Length: 155
Image 1 (cartoon, rainbow, N blue to C red):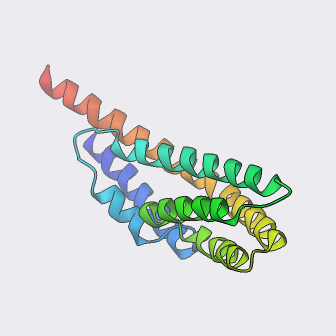
Image 2: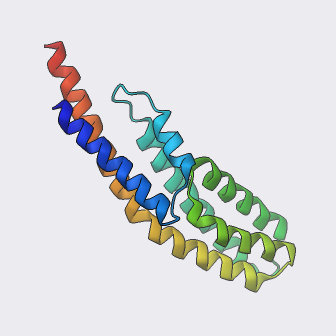
């Protein structure tokens, strides 16, 4: 069973490496994974789920803020900062370029640029989501095996 865990961990690292090569993730994501306890903890799963929820929520709020006839660019900037902080702390490099476009749109007070940036953020995030789901699935399988092994060792 320990061999199964090692194989899944190797598969997960291969996914990280592939996604890093595609420019979807950066080294921070791997650092986050390596910082988790090796005791069957759900830490990394919670981290990924929280990232997905926070980014989704921020994109929804950003879209609503851009629908107002008089766009409040300070509010738009707050969502930019929130998304940027999450992207940096999680390690999703694929969102860096659309976020830079959003930053420039805010600086120019251009609703059109901000709308375009939001569309790009959505598009890049949609590319990333299935990979996050695969990572979650692999991590769940690893945790289940670790817990099963620990339970069998305790009996």
